[in-house]
Length: 419
Image (tube, rainbow, N blue to C red; front, side):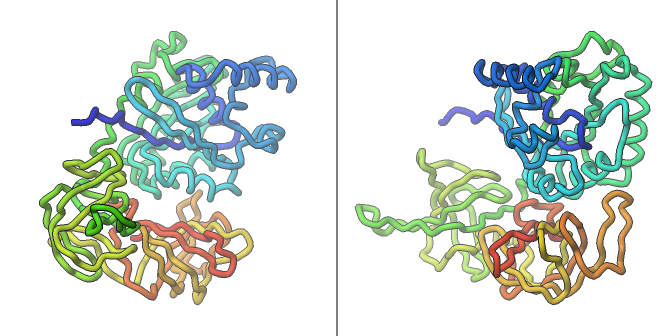
């Protein structure tokens, strides 16, 4: 039996400009001893050159020269660190409205959204926007960090007022788990260790919460979904009759002996074995990359889906979806044609209708809108050339999402969530 794998938590930081997202990540990396001494020395040196009176930990994540010069985050920066309890992948996403698409990209795979708010400024338009995007992307857990508490005298009243105002706003969103933590990223209060400056706060530190938040039940273990990415056939050797199907489990659980059906053909079989580079496994769960072999010789190819005979995804060519438009120089409009990438399958699609454009500040639906421009979000209706095997996004974030690609430029122009 193999050793238990350390659980991985992916989280995305979000919030307004200058709320301290990059500083917070720098503090987490620094205080968990996840950076090398020469990295810290380089940051100290750059901080002095810039005239900062403190070690500017934001420089650990703001890697682009333009980010350092302007003191802002532009692109999504991914950072990795680990504690004895968990591994973490952080997506540091930008706060500016013109980088909404970067935030959507960075947060799309997150288990937790960490929204920062400046204690002096309170809840701003961008704070609401990012909280809404996190709920739209169905991120199961949200932490609201009220940062820069040192600049408001560690005031409990300021924290409680922000907490109350955000709770009112969050009622309009679908947020399953919401936690509030007062911090000072610059000084390290309540980031890795509990702060003595806020004795009135009875909760845990941010790192403790990240280590303990329960994410195992967030995975969909009911709907077994295995999009086939590649058919494995040996080139030569003893196992010349081997035929396996490689891919990543998108939902549910697969075990040898399970009855399965291959879609769209509808042929049924049983799982013979589950193979990995390290040998056979007795089960495969969401996000596991495995090779499944079947007991029967049936026609299976890339883009097909293996699932349970009595629990199948929706098969259809008419799709209703929320999309975030990512295209720089083009707009989405009815009649436009795109390539669509859904799980491991490619097809072509035409936009039949733009239902409405969503104002992500007021949550107002503009039903008179007939186009979507860069960073705008709206509801559309698509018709695909081949049937897609999909679930609602709220049920399965993998089989419920897709990308639209401009065939002329090969640019990805939209990220979609099936309704």
